[in-house]
Length: 300
Image 1 (tube, rainbow, N blue to C red):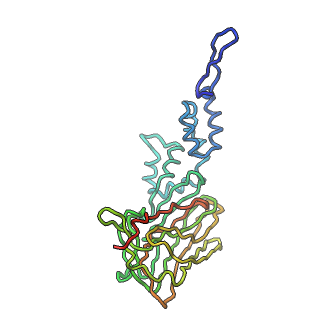
Image 2: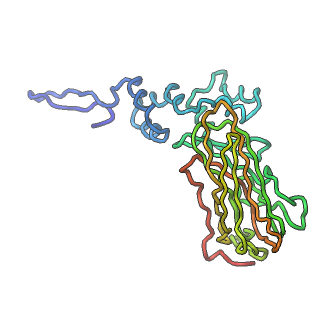
Image 3: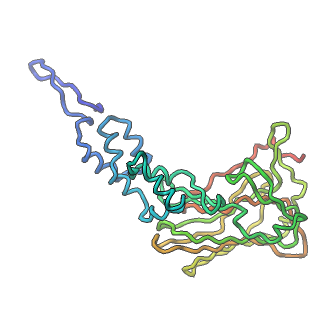
């Protein structure tokens, strides 16, 4: 069946045009599209003009927006800037444009946090920079340094040379859309850098992580909490270590999450660790794993 009118022959040989997809009313098409995922809507919009028009209907995209999308827009910019973004040549943006804006990475809190709307799950994805975390001893350059890198969304990571007391704490208060979320720490054993244009890993300071596991904890304002422990492994790779899950019942009330990782056994030192960020994803959406090709896993 074609996208437009198709041709059939009557018994007398005369040709007539039968209705096709292009003859469907836009309102009818839009009523169907609102039950699909956003990527599917965008694909069907390419079929013909009727689908293209229906795929731009406000009520289609309003059904995909979280109830608190006004709150999310305010996070992107100040009230005055948000008003300017909501207008284009004196005309307010449609719900499709607002949805597209929220699906892009949107920095806030001085650029130390980023959020975007997941196109499939509908929840929020949020990386939190190491600069927005509370790291014990971060101001002592004998132990910690902030190093620039193009392997982070924030273009900088906290690098631990050596310490006896390893502790990183974080806290976020945010109106998340309802759902279940997972929190991870994005870590890297060894110091990634480039040498002669090639990505290499300096593992000079990596030690102590095989002796005792790192403790991960998470607690929410609703009283829920989780804790787990694991050894840090795989030098030369960025690894997302899962801290735990939390549930958001309503987007009308801010959810406060406290999280941490620590290894405070002072019988030995540990070091050679990059702390990039803490990341929050809708449950079931696992952050992409960034690994280094084995031929680049060598020490400077």
